[in-house]
Image (cartoon, rainbow, N blue to C red; front, top):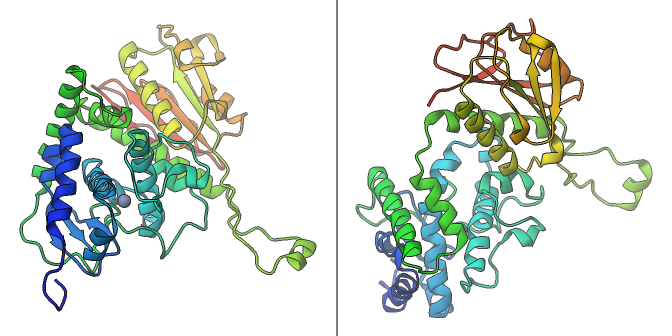
Length: 393
Ligand SMILES: [Zn+2]
């Protein structure tokens, strides 16, 4: 509240929310779950973890109702997509600059909102602002954003987005608990599905989101995704020269040394044990998960090698798509053969999918991370230098 008493134009602000909920009825529950708090010091509008929406009176005065309606949807999208929880799970190194995290999150939201023809304010951030493709998750944008995107001047959508408590997040009683938030997400995802079934128009981005919320993902997917994501972050750091030593000549031409914007994309090899007793369904699910996370972190097909390893017949075969991997059956697995063949391509990451009944290399490779997806309930534990994830549905 300002010293002169409340001056927030609530009528206009709530008219904008009403409009947003009318136009996109599947978002109504989520929109009406937000508590409005007048906050003169918030730059524009921001949300906290308890679904309180802190609003600058000047911002409301400045924006026409249709744009304000779009901003309502933007803010609630941070909460529906659980951006704060996902920010908490980022590796410490990429979480420290909450401004940069916020920019990446706005990229994830705004490409979908613009595709949905929402009139966002002119100074909005979108992937195209940085020459990046649409349709990625914020974790991927975070690693792809240019190095100069950091610090003040970036948008601040509050702790409900980037996860860091802001000084203006005071006031406003109650709010939504984490359990209630989960229920609102599921209810909204169901509403999206129902709206689509009734032949209502729902933007593709919201449909993809609803599928993620409603299709139960068991823990191993998250674990495998986390392991691959973490290894990819390590690999791009390992090969990234943030400050390149300029030649004398270019140093003379340029007054300052700029950080290099290049962040090389890691090379990944996937080694599939085809000779074990693995279930075909689990293998397919694991492969889908690994290719999905690689795409999400921006590792394209040309950086991924898939090797199918049948050590019984000492054949390591390079396949072009994961769909080509065929289980051969039979016993006698030796994934050392497959890993050795994979290392010849100098990958940064090797993902091994196996039933675990195999000898492993005696020591870790020099500069390659190894992740094992262990398929089947009774898989023995690999050596500790291998990040292992048990895949058991
Ligand atoms: Zn935002």
